Length: 122
Image 1 (tube, rainbow, N blue to C red):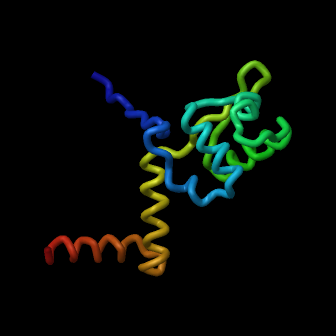
Image 2 (cartoon, rainbow, N blue to C red; image 1 turned 90 degrees about the horizontal axis):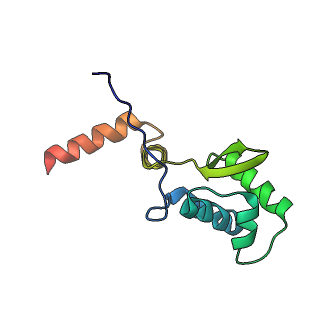
């Protein structure tokens, strides 16, 4: 039969992406909320915040998180629904690039070769 495409859902409450830890506290709180809920409107976020913010301030932060690639959004009946954007694969890729930048001058190839050597030595 035809080849089926696998779809990796962005992670939910059980495994928040480590990239969220790098966000400023308010953005992190909002992003974590959307990841736990798996989808949310700005109004839902405002209602669940630990410290009140205006709807406009929340929408601004949600849109900033969309621009950063942390969230994505869909328009449904004139209301934006915000959704998690990062999958486990995305987080692994980001971590690998950061590791290569920190320890191998940005070369993923050199990082992979070093890991391969370490595997054969052990």
